[in-house]
Length: 359
Ligand code: IPM
Ligand code: MG
Image 1 (cartoon, rainbow, N blue to C red):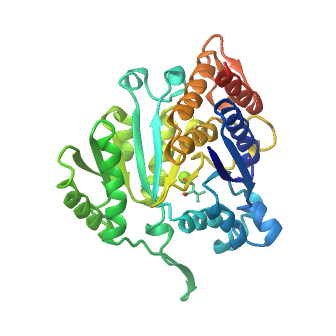
Image 2: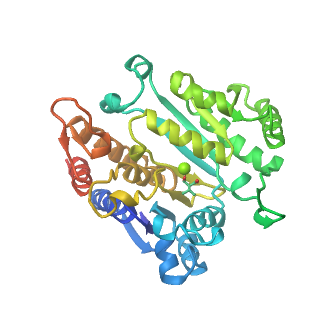
């Protein structure tokens, strides 16, 4: 199959981790006779430096023209003083909105090999951690009006807004995702305080009538944050709004050992998706070849599975990751005190995964 992939390396560790994912994609292409064409696109701090804009229209157009987008990470202290609407992160929000990818899927699954890297007690980890956060990605407070003005003192406002149709389309993804798994959907909101959450809850319950095979429950977001560390085994699929999903997915990643392991897919109405690890640009370790490329490599696997209909190839990547972890190789973030573990740099980890796919 011929596929064009727009590649956004971005800032910080972005270029290093994306290079490893491309090495892996190349091995898959060669093994299965596919032809992946990569088109580089600039976004984030590097685009600000080059064009004075975190996502110029011509770069977004490259992404829209491709069959999917692979993204590393954007941002860093260098651009901290840039005005809010021109920050590197704004590029990320604009590409998500520009591609219309309203559904962000973030798995929280513990690899048995990494059980000891989890900060949770073994008896909690043993019960299993395998859930997915379905995060609404192009609405809510991220995309409401932001303003700061003077009225004797500075006042800032960020508007959180959701329409029924925006809630319904992400709700359906939640139910459909649960239907393919253990059929349990937990809708997370703050309906004891927020109007948007009360609407969210009402829409979820209306949808539930169409999905009688899925068990719907509601949870307040503060309680959910607690339950994720107390009893993560209770969750199958969590569906939630943009900012709650941002926060809960970082928490969920941590209990699986490292945020460096977690991939994500973002999809909208078409098969053209945006694939990125959920971690940031980690400027403190950039350029040192010590980052964990697995989150990005697994994001590439999700691209093959969800956008290119290549489940076998995706399985091969995921199995190769498992094999390399079983062999004891660890990047610094997932290293633990267990005997027999072997430290691996970012580029070595990518190379080991390639080797495991070939064999
Ligand atoms: C994420 C990130 C982004 C977000 C930032 C970088 C804008 O934290 O993808 O989770 O908040 O969505
Ligand atoms: Mg985040």
